[in-house]
Image (cartoon, rainbow, N blue to C red; front, side, top):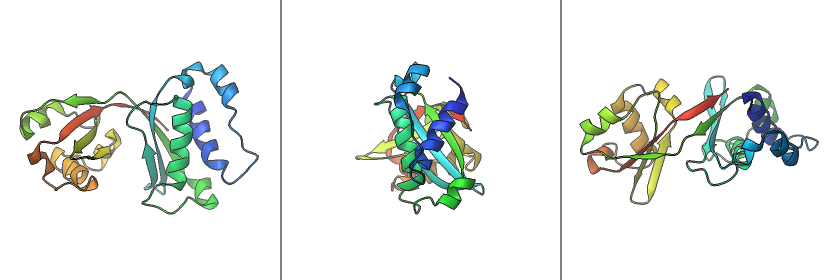
Length: 181
């Protein structure tokens, strides 16, 4: 399947909020691209002037890729609690990036040094999980937070964990993404 098709689906998912004539013909898409019917996990990231403007996604594949993409594109534009709803003017300028996630795999580690040896910067997205809370960073976040220490202290903070949360041995999962711009 062509990346352009996925980007068009994400774009249309957002645009239909501004223009009721925009439709997503799921039947045709599923006929033309049967792989869209397979379960998939996506994140949709919106940027405006190189600044994050919305990012919502699924960590586990639990619904068809088409439905996951439509839902997450819409949520990134209109439901990310960190931002106001995307405006039509912003929509015209926003950049859309889709990440299709592999199945997360738990990292078994004995201590922080062991964990550090098992994490691949710029390749691994990471999920932290402990006491009913979790947070994740896509692999793209390594571009801004390039050291293991920086990446994990921000990831701990994002999940409302202690900044040194790795000392409390949370569950750590890694995944990889296919990035589409």
